[in-house]
Length: 265
Image (tube, rainbow, N blue to C red; front, side, top):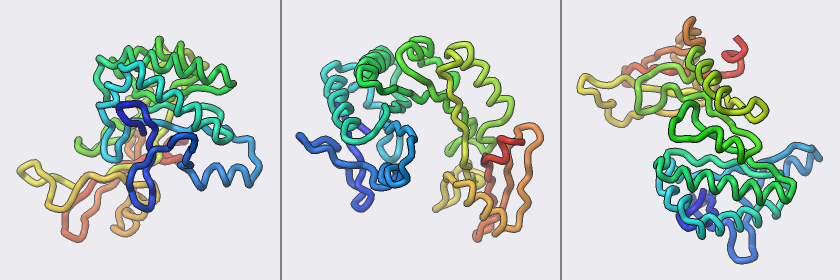
């Protein structure tokens, strides 16, 4: 994640507090598992760290101020260069979401600047984008990056109505739209491998006290089906699995999810 003035930050897993990744000449590690494992196994796997504007709760729209400030972008690029040089990284993934449309020129400018920086060092730049979001200039972005990862999921999400994570027709329509705006050699489709649990609302439209819509892993979804003795139904239209169950308070829940088996069906 980053600050409005372009500083890289990460979260300490033990204290849950943010810290500056770059402090003077010191580059603090943000990973004590993946890179050490890959080095120990002596693999040639390419790793592209992701930087995003997620603040732990939501995607921070304040990233717009950063994007439209050339000095902040320059500071960010310097910190990115220092961080990538600290390990055997092969480039960068940018995931900035939910910022005002007025900041799109700054976003495109940043991608062009980062692309020049990384390509000069033999590295690559990727971005993740929502499908069919009219705020983004997909052709302009495509021209500045090595690949666009289209997030082809979250047709339904927490806070909304229960439903498929990515129904078949919705999924295909997103890909068709992406193909018209993004060159095939730069189009990467991201798939869902998780689900959502929606408790049923009360008659007043509110959630029961103490409950909330939640993310669930595929394993958690299958365990919930087993523990509640409910059969998982594979929806014939959406081609997404789902089921309903009653919790200990006798409140009904709907779970929809996607996994490797669903995508292979």
